[in-house]
Length: 175
Image (cartoon, rainbow, N blue to C red; front, side):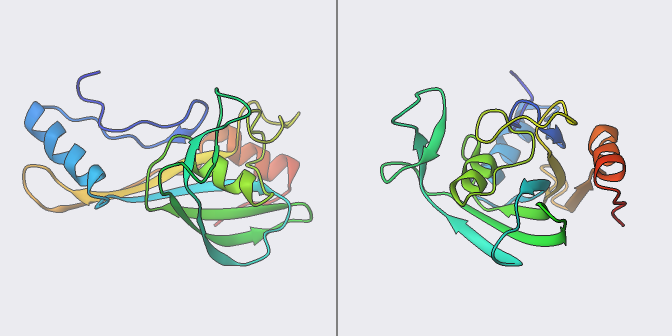
């Protein structure tokens, strides 16, 4: 897929970077590989996290039980996911996530591994009857422009389906 620099999980909304030239693609790809891109996600997870802020470190690889899934396994590749709670509900927690690595299904696997799967995640948690997908949104990216070298920061507000879930199901309007 020429131009596509990175990917999002199926049913995850938000920002992706598309390069307009081979030179830009190589430069942006190198920034992702060197972990120079700042990534921010917004998610709603099941339950109440123990801490308001933490880092989930756990190597991710293929699940030995289900080859279609990923899991935290000792033979996996290192993965680190930082998070900060922005709001707590009775049985859910709204979090801002800053992964430092970019493994397949990383956020979903890490939160499921600590007992707080992403709301609506039918693979690592369970579907939510009021949501057609998982509540996971790539809300911010920061990187160096591949030609000018200037800093670029992109922000994406929650899409309508996730905003509606918050306001209608949880009666919450984030700032």
